[in-house]
Image 1: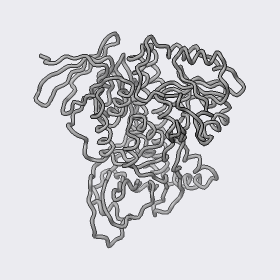
Image 2 (image 1 turned 90 degrees about the vertical axis):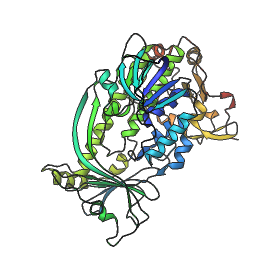
Image 3 (image 1 turned 30 degrees about the horizontal axis):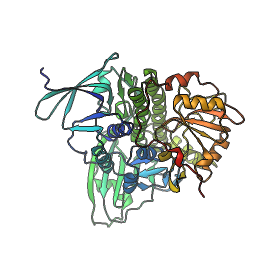
Image 4 (image 1 turned 45 degrees about the vertical axis):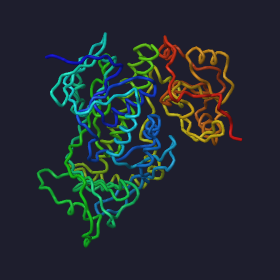
Length: 528
C-alpha cells in the first residue's frame, strides 16, 4: 500500500460525534492541536440522545458552548412512574438549579447539539475536521507515536502519526479492536422501538419523562422540544410491528387527525456493556467505544462527555507540560468504575420500571409501588446520578469520605464587578479554595506546583462555597481542573494530609501553555 501523506500531530480523534468533538474543544482550549477523522461528511441528521444533566452542561460550558446549548435546551421537571393505566405511582423531581449551576435535567435534540459543537470546532485553529473518511487502522505503540491510517472518499490512502489517539468511534469501535479490548457483558438486552415525532396536537404530557411500568408493554415518553416528542416501547418477542398511531394512542385524543410527522422510527437493542480495557499506551477509548448503557437514567451521552473531560486535562498536562505518563493511568482507573456504576444503575432502574419479562414481574411492580410511598425515597432517588469518584492517586480520601472525589458547586460570582460563573473565573488550573488563611507550607506547595490559591471570601458569591466547605468540615480543598476535589484540609488543620502520591503526578518539567481562560485572581473581589 502506497501512502501519499504522512504527518505528525499531537492528537488524532477517531469519530466526530459529540464526545469526539467535545474532546477536541477541551484540548484546544489548553493549546493542544488535534485532527478529527469522521466517516460522515456532515452531522448525522436523526435524533438519538435527548437528555443531559447539570454536570454535563458544566462540561459543555468548559468546552465553550454553554450559551449556545442553553439556547437549544429545554429544562425538564424530572421523572414520573406510571402504572399500566397511566396513573402516577411516583414522581422524582429534578431541580431547576442544580449543584453545577444548571437545571438537573435538560432535553435537547442531538443533531442541534452536534451542529453547535461543530460550529465551535470550525472556529478553533487548533482543530482540523476531516469528514467523509474511513479509518482503516490504529497501530498502538507504547514507546512512540501511534500510526493511524485512513481512506478518503476518492480511495486515497493516508496516514497520521500521533502522540495520542482517542477512539470515539462508537459501539463497533475499530479502536477498541486495535487495543485488544473486549466487552464485559452486564446481562441486559432488550429490543425497543423508538419513535421521534413532531406535532402541534394536544399531546398529553408534563414537562418531564414518563416511564410506564407495564410489564406487558413498558414505555418511555418525553417532550423534547416545543413540538417534538419521543416515545420508546419495548417489543414483545416475535410480535408484528404495530403502527405508530396504535402505539401512541394513549397520548393523543382518539379523534385527533391533525398534523403528525414521524421524524424517525427505528428499532434498537438496548445493551449493558463495559470494555475490559480503555487504554493501550497512548491509545484511549471514550464514549460508546468504552461503555454501552440502556437509556433508563439518561446517562449514555453524559458518560461519554465525562470521559472527554476527565482525559483531556490530563493528556494536555502530559503533552504540553511534561507531566509523567503515570497521570494518564488514572483515566481508566477513575472512569471505568464510575461508568460501570452508572450502567448498573440504568439496568436496575430498567428492570424495576419495566417489570422485566419473567414470572416475578407483577411482584416487582407491587414492591415498586409500595417502595415509592416510603417517605424521603423519591427525594433520595432524585439526587445527582453521578457518584463521587472512588479513592485513587488523584482522589485523596481519609477515614471519612468527606468532599474528596466529589465536584465543587458552581455558583455565580462577582469578578471585577461583573457577574459570571465560577468555572469561568477558575480557568483550567488546579485551584486551592480556602475559607481560612493558608499555612506557609500550603502556600509553598501551591507555588511549587503552579496551583492558584483563592479565598472563597474574595469570590463574591452568595455564600454557597463557604457553606459547602463547612458542611464538608473543610478549611480548604484542592480542586482539579475538572472541578473534582483532589484533597482536603480538614477543619482546624494546617495542610493536606499527605501529598506524596498526587504531587508526583502533578509535577511538570515545562511551564504551562497559557489557556484561553486562565484565572486572573487580580480581578477577584467581593461584591460591594
